[in-house]
Length: 336
Ligand code: AKB
Image 1 (cartoon, protein in one colour):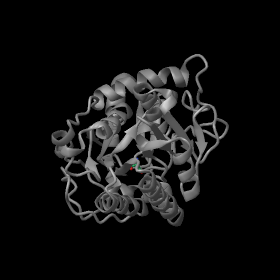
Image 2 (image 1 turned 180 degrees about the horizontal axis):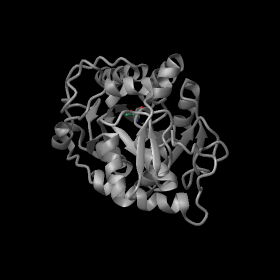
Image 3 (image 1 turned 90 degrees about the horizontal axis):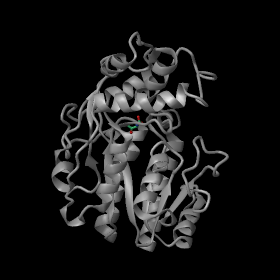
């Protein structure tokens, strides 16, 4: 094997993907890249080994990607650098530049150096005219957000590079991801992470989505495993490379609050709906059908709502309230 480049590595996914890749393939084979410097500007501690195998890469700059791929003898790229849905809606031009421009540059580098590529699509690649329940693998995709436009277009661009240039490009339509390691930034599903921090700190959370807003979610360990398993799968069995529906649970804020209350009696949730994020959520599926991923490469989640919540609370308890914990200072006490 040669080496693996991860772009946007200091984000929510990268912070857990990097250690998993290092463990599976050896730290010396994993090249960590982000627009942020390591480790000073990273929001989270840089993954182990990041100092050695680090490249500062702005994906909108084609030369920077080409250089990183050439210098490190890269044969696989996990392209994670992207803006999430809410921030993309605030800054649509920047979102197009980063999400589409970045992907194009990565695919071009992959074409020139014959790399395999992983592309994270999203439930955001669907829109209000998509069937919202048990959303099929192949269905209407007319997203109404800039994030969704970049994800649906990204899937098509990946398919184009696969068909036209024979590139091995694979992707997942990821649901909201819940993680205790690094916070998400600017997504519509971020409430499902914030709620755990605020439950432990204040026994109270003010949610920016309405109580019954049902969306697909997944615990990060399952998501990391899905990415690695998809990239390791026998390519001959993959019928829909860009991109596979995957999910672990379909839940609403009131479901999640009810589950947390089993561990933190007295936990209270109230609602101050953000119209922008609510409109985005209302345009997305309520539940994906991921049976094609299960058939083609054996996908199966290991965490459901109960096991995810128990694990999140146990792991976050130490981080938030334990010795050396970050505590409530500096946080919005209303949890909004
Ligand atoms: C977001 O909310 O923007 C992301 C996603 C579902 O793609 N978490």
